[in-house]
Length: 210
Figure 1 (cartoon, helix red, strand yellow):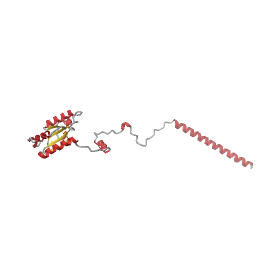
Figure 2 (tube, rainbow, N blue to C red):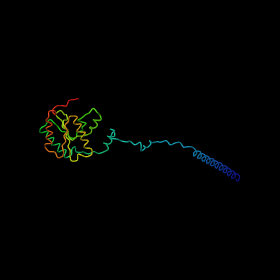
Figure 3 (cartoon, rainbow, N blue to C red):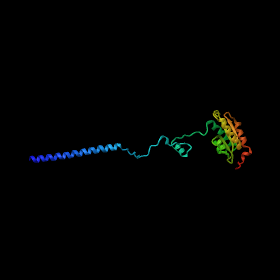
Figure 4 (cartoon, one colour):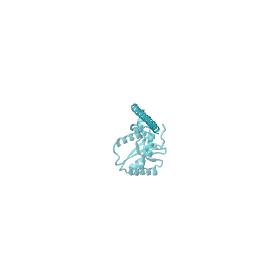
């Protein structure tokens, strides 16, 4: 009985010795593996998403680009503006009545760009007048512009108004278009002078095509 018990304790002791050795060896392996991994250079991380756009790479929009123009229009509000102010509209109606009563073959149009009624073979000359507008244009029965009317209201002479008017007046003179300047204190005779000019025979003929 004692021999059996002694043999059992001996086997248990050997098992514990083997288990301790296995634990010891496993611990040494883990320490060595950790130490080696600390010394190795780590591989760079692979990005899994697109890099963020830097500040300098943001899209710069400009009104010179037609696609950007659509963006600006789509993302902003608009309101209506009057085509003429009160004084301009009063003059417009006076001239319109003159035409309807005594010069029915003529028509008046407000706020017209000079680039629509004038042309020049020189690019710079055309660019100088293209975006400039006149208050009123009178056309004859053939659709040809024959007179320009500029209303010089009380607040007209501001900024570079004098140079703008000089450019418009000279361009119209060279194109054979009469240039009228109507001041804010105009009277009936100022309106009648437009009618007298329209009676001239030159305004009842079509403009030759160049």
